[in-house]
Amino acid sequence: MMGTVLKVNAAVGDQVGVGDTVIVIESMKMELRIVSEIEGTVTSINCSEGETVERHAVVAVVEPEE
Image 1 (cartoon, rainbow, N blue to C red):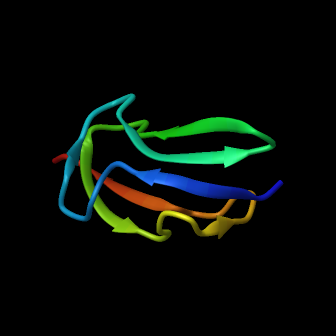
Image 2: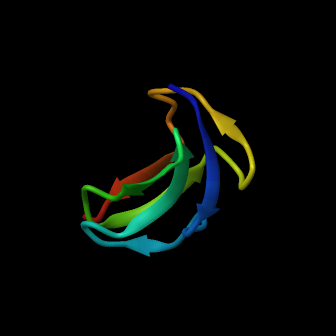
């Protein structure tokens, strides 16, 4: 199932916490929130608003805090 990136809520270098919404994707007329599962720093954003992404695509990377 593909989706379209509606909003990128974080940038590389941002600190995020557990449950913070990093990206919002629309698929099948539903908005899906991609949330951080850990506290850490965003090290990569691999999509942009309006882009179509494939199922299981890595759209962002968060490195854990040490």
